[in-house]
Length: 314
Image 1 (cartoon, rainbow, N blue to C red):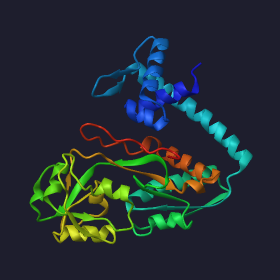
Image 2: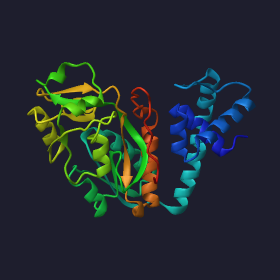
Image 3: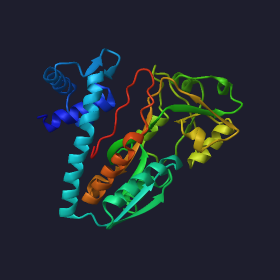
Image 4: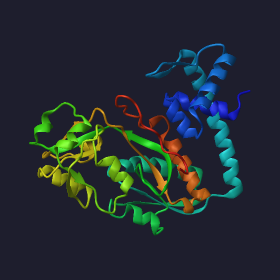
């Protein structure tokens, strides 16, 4: 029989295909991941993963084992969850919110699955803006929010959405005609800034002070909302690194979006106040993770892949 941790490590590595991300996600060391996988391979008598210094891939035998184990594990976890919910009961009201139009479909899938599992708990859905997203969590008007990582000072669930980064520039900007760009170009152009209320960690991730090589990034004007920031870009007041979905949800004839080939992907997931963690909220995080399932946006990996997932309760 496989131990629970062995199964969890194997299936997580089969999904992530990265020892570091698997270790971070399970809160263990990469050495422990490697040790467990090697032990499994000895038991099976064959390699489950092909790995080298650049990549990790499932072998045919590894893929078959993952396909066989995943539904069994899901069935056991579902049975335990239903028993626990029956004992505790998930009732009352949960107030959930999304930040950014393209996150709404993912949130609504989570709400639908949560409603099937917990029909006695009412879910209220609303939208928040950059200016009030943190305040809504702090004042208790929102219990949990689907937003971009990092969201410092809050508990974070697993990453539910991932997308490449692109650089928003004015349609007539010299960079608009490029096929792809490096983050180093940020040192050559003012970068439009997020509102003052946006967290420091988020700003460092989206509008860094320095390029990867250490060059200073000049700061452009700040916008009060995302649409206002794009308007500043269109006016030629600066450039702005954004997620790739911006080109679909914020199409503008006066703004061009150029891929950033060396930037880590943007990740989004659920965030909430650590002190407000309830069984009702935990059940919603589980539903959101399960709803993402096979339809979860896969990581758009730059070269090399270095993105790390969010953690439940981290």
